[in-house]
Amino acid sequence: MARTRKVRQEADRLTDLMNIGALTTRFPLEEIRAVLKETGRESQRERSLPAHLMIYYVIALGLYRPQDTREVLRVLQEGLKASLGPEHEMKTAGKPAISQARSRLGAEPVRRLFEKLVKPIATPETQGAFYRQWRTVALDGFTMEVPDTEANRNAFARPESPSGGESAYPRLRGVGLVEVGTHVLFSVAIGSYAKGEITLAKEVVPHLKPGMLCLADRYFPGYALWKETVETGADLVWRVREKIRFPVEEMLPDGSYLSRFYPKWNKGKPQGEGIPVRVIEYEVLGKEERIRLVTSILDWEAAPAAELAELYHERWEFETTLDEFKTHMRGARTVLRSQKPEFVKQEVYGILLAHFALRGLMHEAALRGGRDPDRISFTHTVNVVRRTLPRFAAFSPPGLERAARHRARRDPGGRRGSPAPAERQARSEAKAEPVPGPATD
Image (cartoon, rainbow, N blue to C red; front, side, top):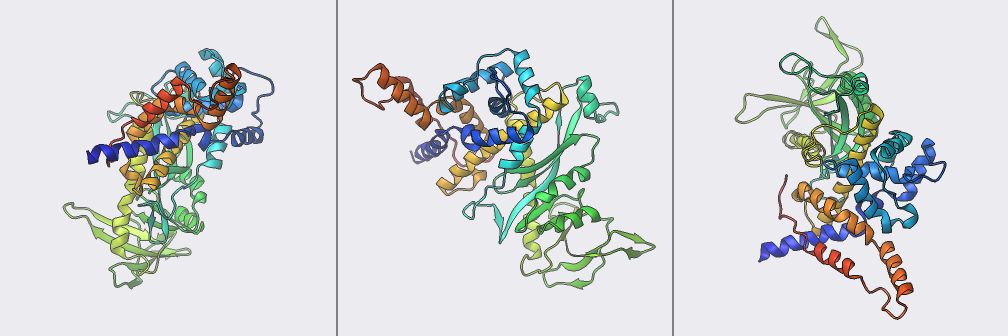
């Protein structure tokens, strides 16, 4: 019985949050209109698929990845019918009209919306989001397969397969920053698979801020990128390869030592301006593996070596985030749906915006329940939102008020504000939505 009660309490928290509309709340219409104006993509005349509603559609494509494009439009129609008013309703359209509307919109407004609204969301009350005074974030790369069309082949590269030939699909490459405690991917750069991770990383590190502690794997550290990253004011804990030299300048009580990161070495002598760093070396129990970390935190008492060694493994939260939007949100669809490079970029940003909306809901639910966001099932959240988003967007407070006025006009003697049978049924079903107990995908 206790388990059942806990499950229902968790369900109430999620469904209450979805009552106000997962998309229209995270991405307000006024913000969408603003980015359309900034990018010059406002609809110039009345259309059945206007630009501001197409942005919601692109985000919905990310949320409903397994569904057909027209089916996603139908679902969105139901959801927006009442929450934004009848003047914003999207009319039924065929695939050619949808494609034309996506082409008019382009990728830039969706990218701008991502850059404008997607930020780290952890608060001091968020469990697992901070190490001492630092907000922990992770830097890493990812790839995604795109449809094998001539345009996509020209825009994105096709990697080699393990057998030596080419892989079945072209791929795009991306590098991003993830807030470890909430799994929010708050900065991203995407390009061709042929573009290196270091090149893309230089586009995202400017989004680091003082008070952040950035974790990264051994394939990123190089003098130029390290220098550029520490200049943001953020602190770093990056794994480095064995071939990079770090001369011991001073051994510290916690087993770490002070050194300098040099641009290059010549005949055993360092060349150029060295950047002060602290080096931590340790072995993983049960594995013949030696790990070497370099950090910008020189004070060993502020961040002891043992703590940073343990913290570094939080970097794998980036992999969990990738799994969420590359696996759990896509269903059986392994390849992006877009046939053109501009649509591919538009679709990727739509997926990331949808992921942010889901993670925002989960974070709010975790705060209300006093729990770690990692302990709420992402897979189940996706399923609940897919089932309830159209229903709850239609029954958001503005929609309820309009429905009440409409009923009052039709039945002046009736009770104002009395919920309709369908509305009562929706709310009843929402309260019955089960959410699994503490579990991590």
